[in-house]
Length: 301
Image 1 (cartoon, rainbow, N blue to C red):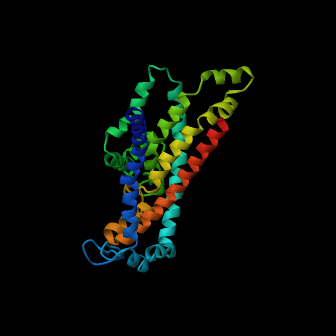
Image 2: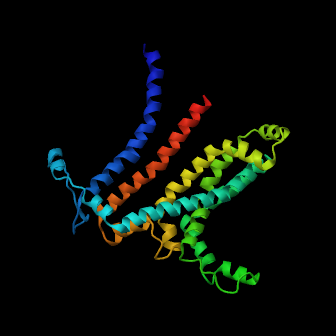
Image 3: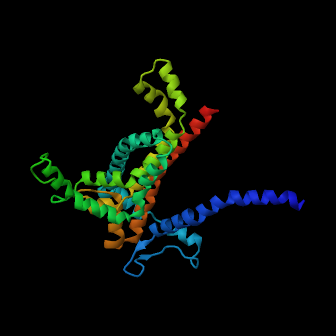
């Protein structure tokens, strides 16, 4: 009896492990932030007045419950514009990252097997350097007297300094550069699994290379496309360092707004409400991706 029940117990341990991980590192911190978002700002340390404590009880908590921080966010155009601007910048940057990463991933997947580990190492190599240092390097490149201006002036392409720094274009460049490996690695994993004989069969049937790409290669690489887009889009929406260092005063993103509310205005409840709403914004693409994966599995069956 004990020997037969032992594998069942181990199986339940394996099943419970990811749920326990989500409980500790996602649900509990989320409820802490959500509880803080329902608090009132105060001149104190910490700078808020909690509306719930174990001494007062749950019923008194519900009697004093209000969503004034959330109503304030929806009533202030600054936060609404910050959300929409963040989603727009993240979507455009994700599309640009896909355009850059797909040819690179395709070349890696079609490279000789002996070269692929080296190419993979070159992709991962930037992670060995601090993220902040890499962004500061782009400041030295994009500023009017930086390397890009000097290089293009020497070639005779431009006669005036580049005005890219402190613009949305610089933010796009920073996001594409920083998150390129997150797009490239899932794409490479999908493209490397494609059987070359499928393309050979398409050519034997009279299909031209571009048609074979759009009808064979690209559809089979869609799982990597969706995964890479999620890995880039989700962190890019809440990005703070890149728009703060490379963007200008007109670069409005929710990460900068959140930082301002938390550290400059010391309004922790409002900042927590902004973070909770940002989480719900990011849940939407995750649900869409999971739905797409479910449809693909059903179609495969």
